Length: 184
Image (cartoon, rainbow, N blue to C red; front, side, top):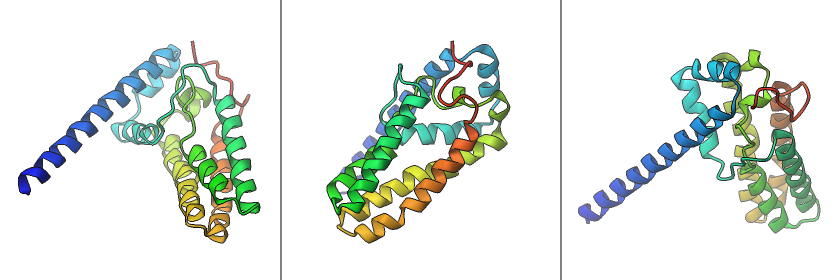
């Protein structure tokens, strides 16, 4: 029995190490798409901030080489509206599926950082992303769980937190929404 548990733990650790290596390769690819001035800022980030960014990216299984942040946000808006419609029409499956899609939104070409102003690419500013991720994606997952259990009242109670997280995060990306002059 202990041998089986040890093998399972070792297998899980190998999988986690492989996943981390894949994430680091993805991040390296994203950095390669960035213009030199952005690359310099990203490389200057602390290990703590880089780890936080990897953690956020690890929560998303859909990464695009073509789609811009604006296009991703259009998808997120569609999922948000579908999630709300599912709640309002007591369609638990629609609310659940839409919330899970929102929580696992696509990561745009180059990642998130190219769509921010250069001045925002620092440890202090980027620290806010973790909280926004928790309030949007984390709360969307809780909404999905509540809807899946048929508790539409509880599911509806999460909408304010998701909306607040969206609005707060958008403030970090203002300028010409969805466009970046920091990508090659």
